[in-house]
Image (tube, rainbow, N blue to C red):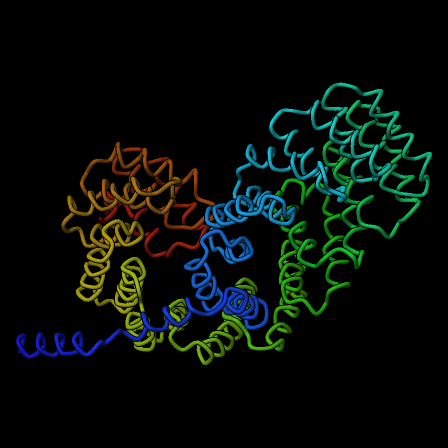
Length: 566
């Protein structure tokens, strides 16, 4: 076979065969440069075909490696800043008299972060430039490289050539302030106001100079003057807002934000970002609740069509305790286009908080109809079935979730839930089997370790194993858990280590917020084992008051019993 292929290749070579793509390149290279350049322009600007344009340029450069127009176009098509700099520099070197190539080279250097080199290029650009913006760029480049004095000289030259331009004047004032020439900066700002008293930007510049020199009352007068001139413009409000924020005047700042929220010139995304920033600080949220409420309410009034705004307003309503209003709003979001899974889970969480199990089930079922393979929803629906003692249904849902689980942590959580179901129907063999699988997927599942240890202690078997499990669960817990500490106390109690059990039980009681009967009952039993009969009976009575089984308490008080049954 190899011999046949070799003969075939030799035959092709002898017959003058040339690969098609090479022939195509040869054909391209024979086309006139002007025609190829026209083709490159057409492909780049009309068809937006960068591959076709690049191919035409390469054909040009095969004929003339220094063809400046092609190199300049290639620089504009470059996918990386480094390549753009390389090609634009070659274009400029090929034709240094063309100011456009020089300007493109300077722009490429800035985009590529080569600021030091850009300074030299922009010095050449401004010599013949009639564009004040080139002076602005050079001044910024010089200032950023700590050449503020030279930057100021460039701005002075620009003023001589073009007259006073507001943007350049503000840069000049900034440079003067940076050099410590406060009086000169202030005089320049006042001169700008004299020349154009109804230009809000000029008053803002003077206000910022006053603010930088801590003349706050004068700064506020100038800011307010700028607002009076154009109360609908964004810049005066944004600047005075920044001023209040820098001074730590939160109430005044929030008043400005409230005004900006109502301004149709401010993009919605900017408003959302501002609200996100504000709502991150819950201390301020509580302290200035009324202003926060006014801001988010106005945001919703001005943008009721925005789902993002509605979601944030719903969250605010929940924080405000207006849960039913939040629920109604969240339900309305389901009607806005195709619902996302978050739209359902938000409603489910609120309904669960309101203890509406039927509604929780209804919206969970609706969510599952839309997202039948979502493991979180299946997990949630399984928990609902378990609460209703529909154990077979719960197992079925958890198994379905397992089929779609995509990580071991989730699988561990689902097997843990299955174990809980089996415990609820008193099948401890299957319960432990499920817990073993949960730990196989994730050995540090603290909840499984706790439950496993507690159930073993109730059965008074494998207590040393139970002790290791609950010790690991406590070690894994980032915060002290009353539940875990109670389990540790109970395992130690079953092991006869009463003094240790007492210490852990005391910690559990101090952390417990539920005021349930079980902890008091356990502590009473531990105290009784230590011979502290009076205090033991005190805690048994507490357990009875909290709903403990009266027969269990009666048995403990019975004189026939020397000690509570383990």
